[in-house]
Amino acid sequence: MSDQSLRVAVLGGGSFGTALASIAADNGAEVRQWMRDPELAAQITNEHRNGRYLPDYAINAAVVASTQMAEVLEGAELVLVAIPSKAFREVVRQARPLLHEAQILVSTTKGIQEEGFKLMSQILEEETGFAHIGVISGPNLASEIADKQLTATVIASDDPQTRTRVQTALGCDYFRVYASNDRYGVELGGALKNIYAIAAGMAAALGMGENTRSMLMTRALAEMSRFAVDQGANPMTFLGLAGVGDLIVTCSSALSRNYRVGQALGEGKSLEEAVEALGQVAEGVNTVRLVRDKAHEDGVYMPLAEGLYQVLFKGVPARDMARLLMLGEQSSDVEFVLPRKDVQQDRREGGEPHG
Ligand SMILES: NC(=O)C1=CN([C@@H]2O[C@H](COP(=O)(O)OP(=O)(O)OC[C@H]3O[C@@H](n4cnc5c(N)ncnc54)[C@H](OP(=O)(O)O)[C@@H]3O)[C@@H](O)[C@H]2O)C=CC1
Ligand SMILES: O=C(CO)COP(=O)(O)O
Image (cartoon, rainbow, N blue to C red):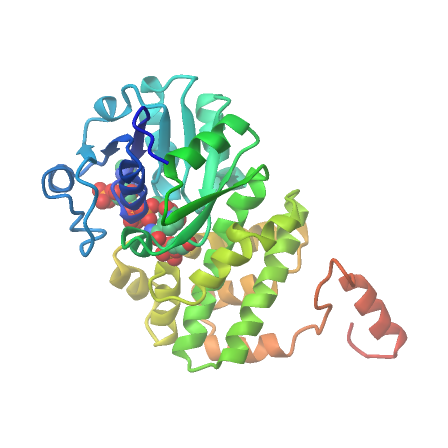
C-alpha cells in the first residue's frame, strides 16, 4: 500500500506519534514529525531512534523530525495529532495559523478535556471548523507497533475521505486500519478503557486471579457502554477494536502506562509516587475523575469508576474497595438484553430487602 505522493505531519514526539510516523514512512509517505525537544528531534532525524520514548526500536530513516511547526505542516495532506489531552488544545492553537481546510486532521489521543467534557476531535473541530476530522483508536501499544507486531486500529470519522485516506496512509502488512463512522463512540472507548486498565493493574498487584480479571473487564465493558449510551454513542461500537479490543490489551499488559500506574498503587505507592515513577502521561488518572463526576451529574450507575475514584483520590485502600464492590447490586449481565430496571423490579417483587 505504498503512498509516495502523500505528505504526513505528526504533532508530538512521544511513543505513539513516533510509531505512527514510522508506519507512514514505511508506507512510502514523506513524513515530518514535530516536537518541542531539539535534541530528540535531531536524534530521530539522524540516528532514527527516539531514545526518550521508544529507545529499543528503529524508526524508519525517512522520518524527519523538527521543532519548527511550520516546516512540519507545510504541504501536509494528513496531520496526526499525538499530544496528551492536557496540552492538546494549546498545540492545536499553535498550529492553527499554519493549517488549511483541505487537510485531514486526526487525533490519536485517548483523553478528555475537563472544561465541557470535550473529546480531542471536538477540540480539533472547535479550533479549526474543518470538514476532514477523524480519530484513530484501538488496541495499539506503541512499542509493539514499533516492533512491527501484527496490529489493528480504527479510523473513525463521518467523512469518507478521511477514513479512506487514513486507511491507505497507514494500512500495511503489519498494521490494519478498520473504518467506523461513530467518531464519538470510538473516541470515548479509547478514553474510558484507561480507567479500567488502572483497576486491572491494581488487581494484578494485589494478587487477584484470572476470574477476577475477567469479571473486571466484562463489567467494565458493561459500564463503558452504559455511559456511552447516555452520552449518545452507539453501544455496538464497544464490540469493536476501539471498545473491547482496546479494553483487553490495556487491562492485560504492563506495556500500558495506565496498567502500570494501577500496579504501583496496588503495591502500596501513593498516586503521586506512581505517576512520578511512570514519567509519562497516564490519561486514565484524570479521566477517572472527570467520568466519575459526569456520571454523578447525569445519574449514570458506574460503580467501578466510583470505586477507583475513591481509591485514587479519597485514600480508600484498594482491597477494601474490591470487597465493597462485591457487595454491590447484583444486576443484569447484558443490560441491552435484560434491562437493569427489570432485574431491580424482579428483586422488589421477590421480596428482597435491597433493590
Ligand atoms: N503510547 C501508546 O501506546 C498509545 C498512546 N495513545 C495516546 O496517544 C496520546 C499521546 O501520545 P504518546 O505518544 O503516547 O504520548 P507520550 O506520553 O509518549 O509523549 C507525549 C508527547 O507530547 C509532548 N507534549 C506534552 N505536552 C506538550 C506541550 N505542552 N507542548 C508540546 N508537546 C507536548 C511531549 O513532549 P515532551 O517530550 O517535550 O514533554 C511528547 O512528545 C496519549 O494521550 C495516548 O492516550 C494511543 C494509543 C497508544
Ligand atoms: O491506549 C493504549 C493501547 O491501546 C496505550 O495505553 P497507555 O496509555 O495506558 O499506555
